[in-house]
Image 1 (cartoon, rainbow, N blue to C red):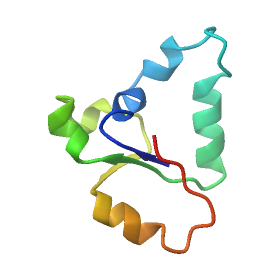
Image 2: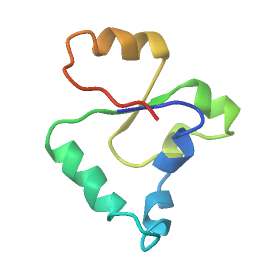
Image 3: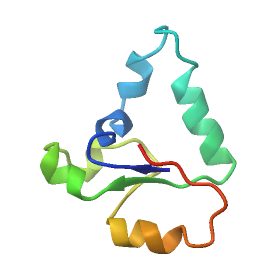
Image 4: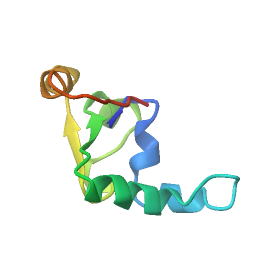
Length: 83
């Protein structure tokens, strides 16, 4: 899963927990579930400057990568998501 600068703030610690009860599934549970299945969670490095974020702001398991790294990593993937 690749989060562009627009979607990156959702991967900040505590954000998805605040979305609970808004007609959405339990996003923290979903996050943990996809990780346990081997999903990689990447945030675009441009989000750090664009959204005034730091690497330590993000949830455990989130990797900060550039778009080139993302594209290289998914070349053999069968499913990818970008937000």
